[in-house]
Length: 617
Image (cartoon, rainbow, N blue to C red; front, side, top):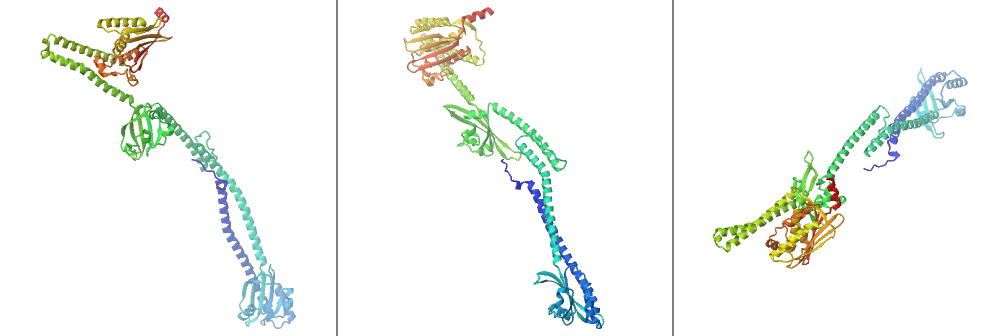
């Protein structure tokens, strides 16, 4: 799986400080609003309380002065100014003393001295004079654009209770708000510095967290890539350290598991590679996921073509089967494939792969090449059929002539000898056939031991030719036998009896299938390490299709003519076995209507080698 790359802003190295930042900002936002609001409220409330207390103290000091009618105006003004001077405030404060007639009679500001004796003309002052209750409120004077705390308190005598006037106090609140703003600025600056410091600390802390995590991530990547030689570094004894130790232990276990799996895979590959049977594995949909070399060879396909393809297409059985037919139960089918005109017969055995729950996960198909087995079975059936047929014919003749003799034909002096001669001929024919079958059986089971002799092949062939010519004189037939022998001595190590029997058989076949008076050519050629004996005739010849099967048992080109001449179809098969037992080979070249040539190739033994071998003995 391809890993996606991530940017710095997606990294935990960035997210942890960002989380700290959000937490700090939320904390500062909450505590800042609460603290500043409380600070501002508290400072303004203290300021107002201070003004209110001072106003009460001032009205208490002014009441006796205004109630004493015996004081002259100058003395009264002097005492009022002294009382106003006792008013203590840290902020700029303007104080007016107004009599019940709304006339300003005193002030603490030199700049307002010109207003003494003038009417106040203020609705608040008028309402306080009428209601005799203190008015306190925060106001903003438009001309100055500053906040002020306005307190209008009545001045009352205690006995008898009467209104002596009012005190108007305007306390400047600009310094209070300015101080609050400075505190807010200090708070914000401190918050920013704290955030910066927290971010730096968070980055270092996040590095302490992300470095082990990054180290473990790299270890996980190495594990996924099959690299186990670089364990994750353990930075501490905390949870991350324990996690690093666990990942290292996991890496060791994964390596052991992978080594075990790889060993099992190699063992399985070795088994599959050297199996004589083909193996195909599929998923639950029947698509090929594994195929060994033997299966590719048997099916004559490439692995690239086979992988991922449906097994029905791979085996060529889509027209006859569905995947469900193969999955429902273990089955066995026969697959026939023809490649380059060569028929291959395969036995396909299917096994269903199931989980413990019964869910089908795929199929396993084992392919076995049964071509030779089928061929052997067919040859066995043909052999039994041929033997039965070949024995049935002479037995039928023997039975028929025997029954005729038993019925009285033995009394006829002319017919009885003929019948007995036929019975003898057919019996000899059966004896030859049985003898040939026994010889082939012994050859197949390696029970025949050759009597090897060091013999001159030309002498053996000459002896066979002389005997054959003598026989022809006696029976009144004449064939011309032409010899083409090499001038060199040709010594071979052979079993003379069996080789004589084989050559004699080939010569008799050449005579049988040659026209009367035809020429039979016998050639002996030698080379450095082999000798070739060939027997040619000018007979009917053999077609190419028949020549391919000529050395098979019971195979005859012209069955009717062969039976007339007493042939059983075993002579050439025996000849082939005899030649191969001598380490040679036999083959035929033939053209129809032009004749045939049989070749026998045998290993050549030099006379010098034989002398040395004899001396050693």
